[in-house]
Image 1 (cartoon, rainbow, N blue to C red):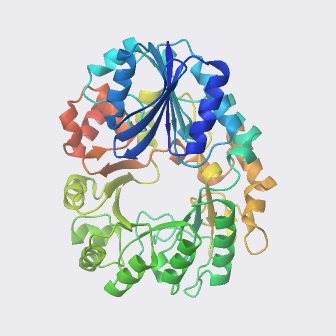
Image 2: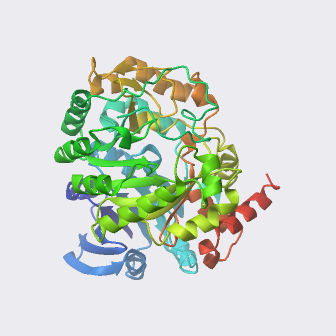
Image 3: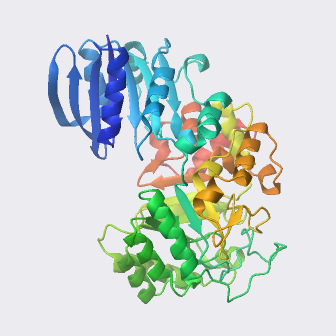
Length: 503
């Protein structure tokens, strides 16, 4: 007997999934599970045989699935829904397409397309194998099961991707999820790894100190975005330092009053106590500090123009002013390079107990990481970049570019002062670029050498957890003891490098 486990955040999605399942399988058990907090769930059970009953809200998901098998179900189709509402026909398509598999275990994550659906088919034999493992889930929330390649589905085919991303673009991607708005193109630092502000970058555009986005232009963007997508994310930074804009606090508050989620990254040099208090009071959701060193000497090499001691003081003062308030979430990012690679572990140890998360990110050329990725996930060739379907980048003067890597504005799709976001998002120029992602005709210079399309940029730590899939896969592949996942990152990195012949 088959059971359907529907995990949901939207009651409407849950009802739609139940309705469709009942249309082709009237006798199966349907278990609707809502995530309450961390790994705790509340569940409502419905089946044709036993009617309706409530299962304890404190059952862990893994234990819950175990109980389903012990109750006589031999096969479970897990449908994990999260995020924004899904069109009913999409639910119908993914359930039909994947649930009827005859394999012992099938996994398909629609999150590769930024569509919040994870489908897993698991039978009792495979689950019993899983029970012997200490680590039960992968970073995307799927069960951690190793199977033969033909019995699992890690990557969507090109035809499946095209079905959602091109053929039904307006239905599944009607509006960007995140809009990066450049309030100030300038920066107070000249970081050596920055592709735009470093002294070695030969810019083809001239930026003046007086260049700032006007409040009028910003208001136009936020007004349309908030009316088209509930909870749209606004990131008030692209190439420059957002704290340079004299109206930053007012702009954050305006977006928050419109129901937007707002977060940005800063080098923290201008984060005075007064600014910190104003930003916190504005309702900001998240802030990420960009610091590439553990000592002053290295900082001066990598982030010239900044003051290392002042940055540390500013961050500490920010956290002190924030106190026990839930927001903004505070995190930190470290761009790993040849100059600071030996500082990664010390950096992680210094900040992991003070901030929500710490990210160690490679320089933009992450070809080495891509080689590791291919080793574990058997990618035959690159697939379309998710950014074209998720993000929109608007420079200070209103010009819209297709990617954050288009620092010089070499491919302008339109201008927000003359066009609406929707017109540009669905316009011919942008759609032509999306189609070329499938035709392998990536003629933009910044696309050819880029590997960000793969989703690999670094390793993020939240508490004690390594969340980056590449390293989770690598540690599993080399039989690293589970306890070593929380050891210095260099241990994992060295083992991975060794597998690749030291590359």
